[in-house]
Length: 193
Image (tube, rainbow, N blue to C red; front, top):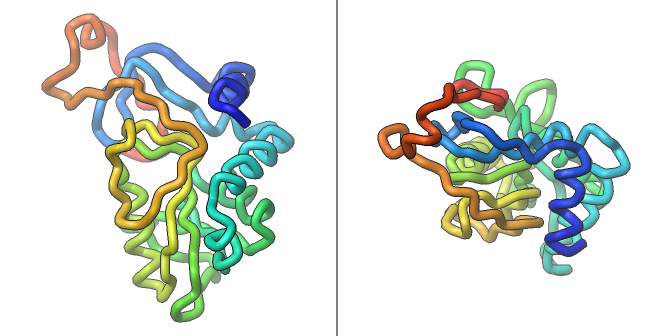
């Protein structure tokens, strides 16, 4: 899939939103990618996961033992990546504010993991998920995401493979342009800022 094909999938599913959004990173943006909408069609989710898996170097694909993604946003794409790679998929969640494996999920010591997100903006959630995977005994070989919103600046501490990189500007709360600040911010994500 080419970048135009990927963005067409987002537009077709009405997943590329415009307005004033408060991102889970605490930053503001005039654009929001609602990956839950693009992933609600199982065939589309499978196509995107297959395309994302194809971006990974062959040696990396062959070494991955499990896919782990952060809940909520990463659950569907993580599951589909597990299917595309032929490995089990699980997720970490924040029952008390810190990511952890639950629901009987576990990793063998040294098990090689691909951490998969839907969207990376600052990389904070990804780094927190990676820390939880490592605390559970996994070795994170790389991170992957449908969308890199960081314009290539997110540092996950491991190699990072996004399907598409977008450069929608984001703003700290004290840097929001007046035209954006003139409308109330909507918090469309699954996590409190």
